[in-house]
Amino acid sequence: MNRNTKLNLFKIVYKIRKVEETISKLYSENEMRCPVHLSIGQEAVASGVCSNLKENDEIISTHRSHAHYIAKGGNLNSMISEIYGKKSGCALGIGGSMHLQDLKKGINGSVPIVGSTIPIGVGIALFNKIKKKNNLVTIFFGEGATEEGVFHESINFAALHNLPILFVCENNLYSVYTGLEQRQPKKRDLKKICEGNSLAYYHEDGNDVIKVHNKVKEIVKRIRKNNQPTLIELSTYRWLEHCGPNWDDNLRYRPSGELKKWIKKCPLARIKKQIKNKPLISRATKQLDKEINSAFVFAKNSKFPSNKIIKNFYF
Ligand SMILES: Cc1ncc(C[n+]2csc(CCOP(=O)(O)OP(=O)(O)O)c2C)c(N)n1
Image (tube, rainbow, N blue to C red; front, side):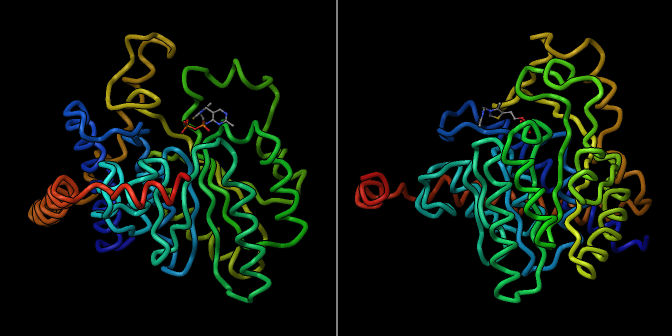
């Protein structure tokens, strides 16, 4: 991989980390009045996937959508404003963190009902196929969503109609406080489920952005050529609480030492190590810090939506 591609991957991972850390730091000011599901520790998934997508490719996301939105190039001012409930937000300040969208960048939306965006993404891909739009749809979801009925119906339908879809299963082992072993039978095998539905299946280390980028590059090339819907499962780990800005290891729903083990596989530290040129890193981070800081200032200084906007939406 050349130096520029590595640097670009570093920049995306860094940007997601920094935005999430800033949200976490400022959340206690009580100005962000919506729940936030942060992706600290999981940044390599969104970064390695979206770095292979074109601007007219479309994505759809979940309650944990910040990283996907940022990696696909969503407008940062609109994202932060949305979290602050401001009119300048990407959903006019009415949706909050779990309803990010930027249609100009192919970010079609995010929905917090677990599993619900999977059939929506399949529908978008079917529409694109009928309209001969010739682009790719990427559907992000957690491993918890594969336990929902719509996941199974959707992959069956996608395969039947040869829809150019990349299903990205972000496996962070937990659905809120419940581990995999309490939710899925021991012998359950996602690869077999996919292959039984004529979906190609791949797995990769979701904390290594270079590996994710390279694997997805191959997959995307193949999907564009033969339209075979494909699922990639990326193993990763959420560092903070399921919902909110805090650490929650004290709650003991995860085995002792597990978090520490995953922090050692930090996606940001790993890509940073790959870039030997320190001035290059310093220049990139300075520029990104400035952009992020200015998005928070913009959001804080923006106006709330008027009563008219709110009434039109809810009533
Ligand atoms: C249909 C439905 N059931 C339950 C919930 C409550 N809920 C919100 S997020 C979540 C966990 C989902 O886990 P996963 O899909 O693995 O994503 P992660 O939070 O780990 O990123 C649950 C159960 C919901 N939003 N929708």
